[in-house]
Image (cartoon, rainbow, N blue to C red; front, side, top):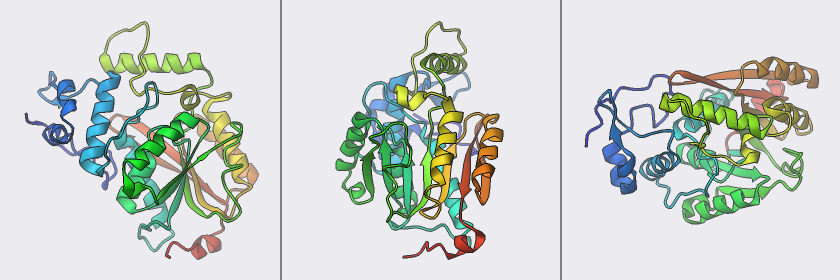
Length: 316
């Protein structure tokens, strides 16, 4: 079986392992069960049906085995199954952000610690961040079942045991409270926030996604990337969640260099910038990430002055 189109996806970060078209021969060799989901489309290119939940999960298993040496990765039914190339882009752009304050060099090693807010059941950001840069992570979530699944993934991959720790957020209305302790020093936070304000809104968005992927009109949606309620929606939606995050971040100004979060809706940025200016953020950045025809972005802010940024210790 041959993957015909090996063109580089120039929209992805230059260090992204997935910037070339998927090599399905290699992926199937790593995870043979992927074979049943691969077909040749009308453009004579091998692909999978990205609206099919099991196909997406099989592709993720193959990618994690082939490119990240992650064994026995799995997630429970109906949990978020993230697109790995996009998640990798976020990690690489955070690396570039850290490099700006480290003489242009990406800081690497276990002493660089990231806080993954809402790690979910998949553990994807810590897996990629540790593989690519040797970073350590604290992963938090309000869902105990999700954390138990992450623990299972970590246990089945001993190289992750000493570099990923997990913490249950016991008060769901908070983000950093109970998590960031007095002695903690995080180089960055990373977050894929719940985007929607209700279950109904999330369902409509899922239906649009499936219709776009299949080019058909469906009356109901199977979430191709899955997602529990807490992963998909919260009161106030994306804006409410990130606003809460901003107000909480003020309480930990010197314990984290860069607070960051994905922002799905560009219109949300104006309000968040206003809040960040109100609470006295010293520097605010919006980093655009293009994946194919889709543009995504993450927001980053810090309370450290330029002098304090320069004094931050990235080396051991």
